[in-house]
Amino acid sequence: MLRSALFTTLLALSVSAGAQGFDYNYFQLGYSSIDVDEVNVDGDGMSLGGSFAINENYHVFAGYTSGDLDFNVDYTGWNAGIGYNSALSDKVDAYARLSYEYAELDVPGFGDFDDDGFGFSVGLRFAATPDVELGAAINYVDLSDSGDDTGFEARALYNFTDAFAMGLVGEWGDDISVYSLIGRFYFGK
Image (cartoon, rainbow, N blue to C red; front, side):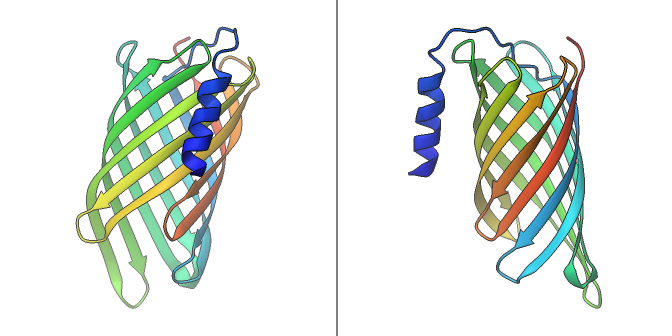
C-alpha cells in the first residue's frame, strides 16, 4: 500500500513543468548503519558504487559493500548488472535493473559463508527541484542457498554542483534495515 502510494505521488508530481536530465554516469561512496532484526545484530559499513550510461536508455552498474557487525562478524557483498532507464516526463525517470549478486559472511569460530544469485530492481528518480532529487525503488534479491528477499528503498539527494551531490538512503528488507549517507560524483556532463 505504501509503495503504490509513493509511486502514485511521484508520478502525479511529475506533471509540473521543469527540465531535469537524469545522469547515469556517476561514482558513489557511502557510509551505512546496518540493523539485522532477526538475530539482533547491528554494525556499520562502507560502500562504493557507480553507473555508466551506454546510451540514452541503457546503463551498466556495479557496487561493493563491506560491513563490520556485532560479535566480529564481517560482511562483504558486490553486484554488477545492466539497467534500462526511460524518461516519463522532464522530472521523472523510471528504471529497471538486472544484476548478479554475491555475498560473503565471515563468522568467527564458524568460518566463511558465501552465496550468489541475481537481483532485480524497479524504481523512479524524481527532480523535486533543480537541486533536490528524490527516489524510490523496490529491490528483489534471490541468492542460491540463502533464499530471497524483497525490499523497499527511498533516497534524497542534494546537488551542490552539477558534478557533486550528497544524500540519505534508507533500505528496508524482511529482516535488515540499512541507513546510508552517500556522496555522488557525476562525470561526463
